[in-house]
Length: 216
Image (cartoon, rainbow, N blue to C red; front, side, top):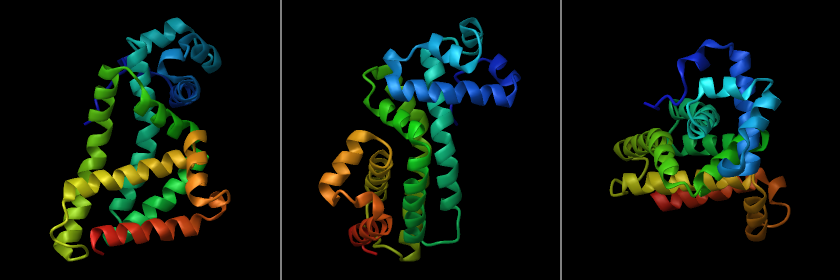
């Protein structure tokens, strides 16, 4: 269960106002990082006072944690729906890769915020974030792999935990590669300047690697 990092007063305002504050904050934190992001700027752009902002959140850290949770939860919900589909493990993985390609392009600020989170130097903040946000994904992927082993889709001697960890890293790298400047350029170095016009080739190539790695 993800810990709540906001005061009850934040839940009492309208959904439209909450979403306006969070979407404004996603952009500010994604573009400037946690340390440089300005809460005064966020409040002004969201059409509220700074005083109101700190009635909703005790600290800037709590505000950031709430914003990250809001952004990443949107993708997590989509991925969870895929994991519940009546597909074998490889079918689910392919669906997830396709969602990542689409979602990361449309919601670049959210993915860039996630990228910012992973590079943040505040150790305590990162510990809180990783523990809360990654646990659900880890559990889902491990269960998916264990089920695939039971069904005989993949080899029974596959290490479920390690495979889930590596699979999540593939997903994370793809998210960054479709949304952040550095990872986009990195992907082009490896796969060519026109890689972003070849989504189907990327899906097929990634799936081939994953199938061979997991013995499918």
